[in-house]
Structure formats: C-alpha cells, structure tokens
Length: 88
Image 1 (cartoon, rainbow, N blue to C red):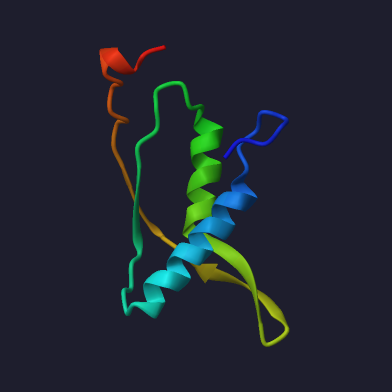
Image 2 (image 1 turned 135 degrees about the vertical axis):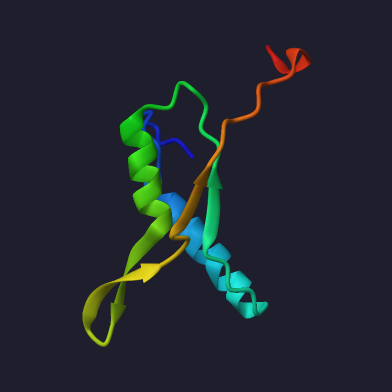
C-alpha cells in the first residue's frame, strides 16, 4: 500500500502481516518464511525497510516492549515480467 505522500506504508504492511500470522497460528500453522519478488525499480533502502518490517514488530509483553517475530526467514527472487498484454 502506498500513502498519499507516495511513500510505502510499512506500518500497514506490519499490521497486515501480524493478522496473517495470527490467522495461521489459529489454524495450527507455524510459518517463519516469506519471499520477496521486488521489481528492478525498487530502491535498496525500500527493500531493507521492507525486510525489517516483515521480520518482527514491536509488542508489549509484561509491560516491556519487545520484538515479536513475524517472518524472519526471507528469500529473494525476481519479480515476474509483465505479459505484453498487461501493459497499459
């Protein structure tokens, strides 16, 4: 999701992934991995921030703020090329 300012909304990404993690746990699935498929136009800092966002989130446990795990095992691949029919 992109904010009105044109920046990626990493807070929203974290909230969505927290919900995904919660739903998986409810189904008895313990998933630790995620795959990134960035397009060539995504800059390095955006990738690093996204990686930090998907690894963990700040949570309050016993009145202390801790890093709670989301998806710490990150794999990379190349985003698929769009089909010629998808352009425009």
